[in-house]
Length: 213
Ligand SMILES: C[S@@+](CC[C@H](N)C(=O)[O-])C[C@H]1O[C@@H](n2cnc3c(N)ncnc32)[C@H](O)[C@@H]1O
Image 1: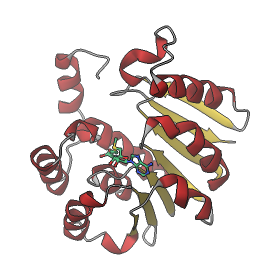
Image 2 (image 1 turned 60 degrees about the vertical axis):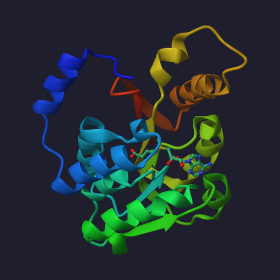
Image 3 (image 1 turned 135 degrees about the vertical axis):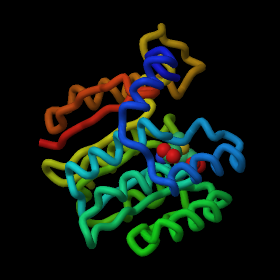
Image 4 (image 1 turned 120 degrees about the vertical axis):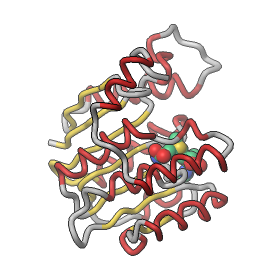
């Protein structure tokens, strides 16, 4: 869901930097070849991810929720020369499209793909990350947060996607809607965490930018 009019969003996109040809084709292929192409970050959010990464110049990035690899390649644009991205997705059917575009981008040696459940691999990851992008199943956001905060280095940045969940986070509680319930608690926990400074932005479906102090 977008929180601004289509016309205004088009204006924002047309006055932002352009995505690369590889990303444009990946976006197109995602729409042709996947069942739920709306999950892709897309042009505008992709430029935002790239911009944050370019400002931070991370050595180590962690992404939870690769999908077809669009956001992975956007985040990779800011990597330090020897920098790496660990990216996790439990859908093995996406590997073919991911691999094709990671190879095309010539960044394949800097991208480590984990094709498994994020809850299984997160406790096994070692070292500290400079930048983490959380964009997997919403019902597990609180579980992910427990692992993510210790994995983030001091002064590191966490970007969490879909935190407005089509605006449902301001609606009355509905016990049957687990994802919204979890996202409400996630936003509360993040904004109350004394070790994290957070700004929640109405970009696309809502993005939280959190800085570890
Ligand atoms: C919203 S999509 C990610 C979009 C991607 N970051 C982008 O911007 O193009 C969410 C992805 O999380 C993956 N996913 C869902 N549950 C997962 C889990 N428990 N562990 C790992 N990946 C999961 C799905 O297969 C899906 O590809």
